[in-house]
Length: 165
Figure 1 (tube, rainbow, N blue to C red):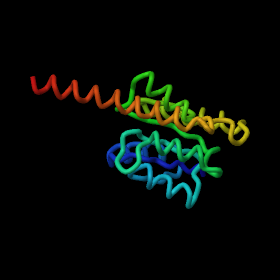
Figure 2: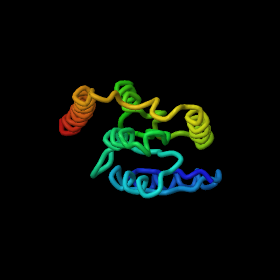
Figure 3: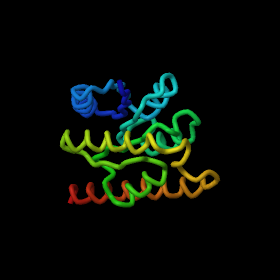
């Protein structure tokens, strides 16, 4: 049975994904944040991870960065599933970190399952370590990460200012 690790701080999102995946024959392991997901994956590596980006303790971007740096986990397919980071620059950054897919919430269950099956099928043919952030470019990755977070913060500030006005 294919084990899927889900990282999301919203219990309703975990419940929904869990229901969709379990009804399709997947074994599901939930985690509340990136740090918990990383710990669980290092205990028993899953066959796939689906993670939100905006989470406490460790966000999805940092989870992906550490995931792809881990010698055991780097070959495990990585899917971002987010409702917050939906800009094309966010997607580009996520894929540059080594993610196999970038999906926005919500997705219809049949489309989500098709994407999952496609990622699993596609990554089976890859050789280990073919995808991931460029080693030695740590400062570039961190700069891009800061730009993504700053852009998100600016957007939230504009929303708050509009709401106050």
